[in-house]
Image 1 (cartoon, rainbow, N blue to C red):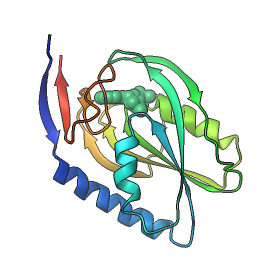
Image 2 (tube, rainbow, N blue to C red; image 1 turned 135 degrees about the horizontal axis):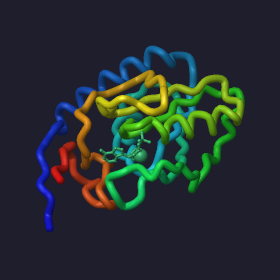
Image 3 (spheres, helix red, strand yellow; image 1 turned 30 degrees about the horizontal axis):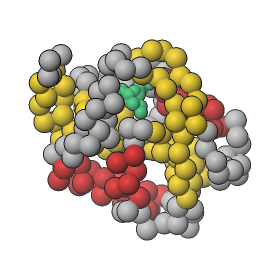
Image 4 (spheres, protein in one colour; image 1 turned 180 degrees about the vertical axis):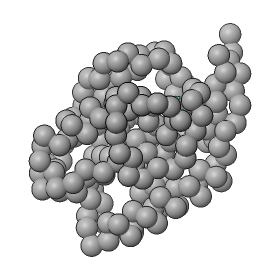
Length: 173
Ligand code: IMP
Ligand code: MG
């Protein structure tokens, strides 16, 4: 059965939010060349749009973890499926994530990368759910706060579908 979806953020609004984030990053990282680590798969579209607004020299890498199975609920377990390939020791790292829900995924990746001795690790998330987080994490750069509902589109999936949608929608169960 097809589930109902309702638009939450349109592409123009997303674009504007990303421009604002990029302005802050261009300012905060001027004279630096951070390594941007994109958390796959959800953040790929956000990454692609964000980096095109950056004026600073960046290097791009990817990390893949699993925390959610093919359902809308967290499994509570985070596993590294693909590690980064650039050496981040002594470097400024900017983690790019699609959405922060419980914070479990990001806090795990944050601690994992910290052990590689980077100079700094900051977090940039397109969306943050308005929830009481089980893991305390500092989101340094945030695009939008969204309600505590399941969202899809613009890279975000439900059972691997809908990542290709240009807008962000709420999925109704
Ligand atoms: P957390 O570990 O609970 O913060 O969950 C973060 C991860 O779960 C994100 O990287 C997303 O991939 C996924 N996720 C959390 N909420 C949603 C949602 O509403 N839609 C799609 N994916 C989500
Ligand atoms: Mg994700």
